Image 1 (cartoon, one colour):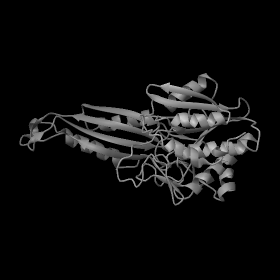
Image 2 (cartoon, helix red, strand yellow; image 1 turned 180 degrees about the vertical axis):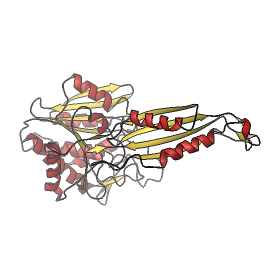
Image 3 (cartoon, rainbow, N blue to C red; image 1 turned 135 degrees about the horizontal axis):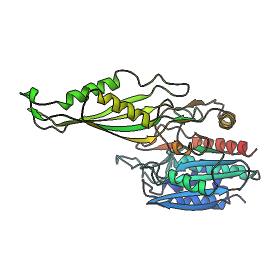
Image 4 (spheres, helix red, strand yellow; image 1 turned 30 degrees about the horizontal axis):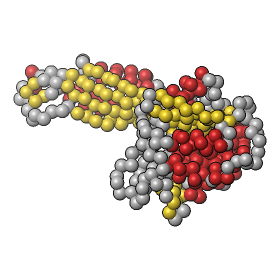
Length: 377
């Protein structure tokens, strides 16, 4: 028998919100989720890497395998002027409040409810699994990346993965993310010769060289975009010399920048481009980069059509397929299987008084139920 309280996403969403799981803490959130999944017949495996709690749960061993991916960790509360307890899970005027209501404990609860609704009426023909991490809002080192390595070793890689991030900008059902831009952060330091500002011929001002290099990097677009990606964006995020003296030419000048990029590039190719550009303006310099994630896109096809058709059937809205926004753990999953993202309206994620209408949460559960049904057909 399917527990009736799991047919509605609200009780589980409230229970998880009441767990203070500000990254990297778990606060008992995954234990609450595991208990719900075990009552549906899922086999749960708790995977701890470093200080991060992760959960993998699977029901079924054959047929087409659909995996739902999400995270139970949340960002800090921030400003203290919340109307209610951020971890209270209160419902007021038909709206659920709490940190994680939107991003993304609400979606996890909706997927559990969607699975429960399907199983209450149908036998399981394929496999359903959950990949849940506690490290999405943090460094993302000991979370989804490590779980995926374990899943590959244990033969749990799915045919398709759905990430429950809040993707909809205005109305539930209006957007599915089928890809994400890549992201690379870079640190540039140009070295010159320190000296007195009154005797510039005895010095080599690294600030002047840095400004010319940055102007060259930003004077033209990185690219013109592509079928699924808007033009890549290079943004300078800091220029600093740490100079507290008005008459000193400093010995070095530093800058930071971020590039959000399409499939036309890689983190390595963009780092090489920046180094070559800086080399035109400086003899001695360093460029250091960290790639947060490479770009990816899941081309429209039968799997994406299942998502679209389920959304249309439930909401009457044909969702836009999009690749904008920031990064998500889908960037790691894309290395293993096709992946797309669909979840709640993201208007209040990370905000004070984060919230979601209960009706929207229940509508999302019905959409997820239809997606599960389509994958089981």
